[in-house]
Image (cartoon, rainbow over all chains, first blue to last red):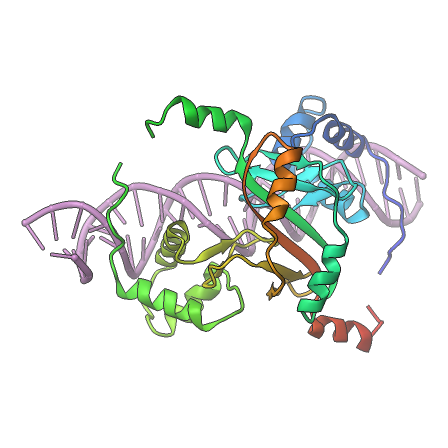
Length: 138
Length: 138
DNA sequence: TTATGTGCAAAACATTTGCAGGAGT
DNA sequence: ACTCCTGCAAATGTTTTGCACATAA
């Protein structure tokens, strides 16, 4: 099994990464596909999936396994937490410090070898909060 | 839109809940289907999905939106954290105290109204840890 | 009796994969 | 040249849904 063949620099990969870096919206694979297609109309959805997967394995980007039905992707690789709006599904970053010490607490409570953790907050984004207050007719 | 019609107590619902209570394995909908089918061979997969969804909305059970491709279900409703094995995908409970204060930290760092949080740890279960050590041929 | 729930099958999504031709090194 | 990569389309896997019949209340 070959491990260290470097990833080829293809136009598709460059554009996918560039588009992902442009946004902070944590797009799904399909949303990335839509963004990239504006520049490369003939790109295939499979290529987008393959490359997002590959880049996340390499550590070039982050694959977010947050709630909802689709995986999301993030060009910000530095560990950080996320909030997801229960109404609209939007995912945003939470700029609070990542507590590595939490891993040690967990290690004491399981038989697992703990490697990392992720916190997903759940709440209402400001837009949906306002929408709730405007009409209590629901 | 009717909101408060009580859920009917059907055999299917009883059996689904009973089977879920028996295990600590956080089964997927399909695994629940297999468990339940031993007692109700003619139950449909759709019924299992519908009822797991309904019970999680009611708060009778928990729907876990952890990593991996399938949702998982848990009869333990009390808030608690989970670990997922990156090798075999197994999900287990982490018996460490849930820190409500973490919600306030997050509230300061976002424009969201924070409602709750969930921590998913990632690591290697004891079985997979041993498997790793037995053969470094991989 | 009647609104809800069920089984079955099809549909709807999300993601992966096989393959023949194309492009990076 | 020789792999690796891409587009396309089909396959796979998960979840949802429409409908006619069944059943709890």
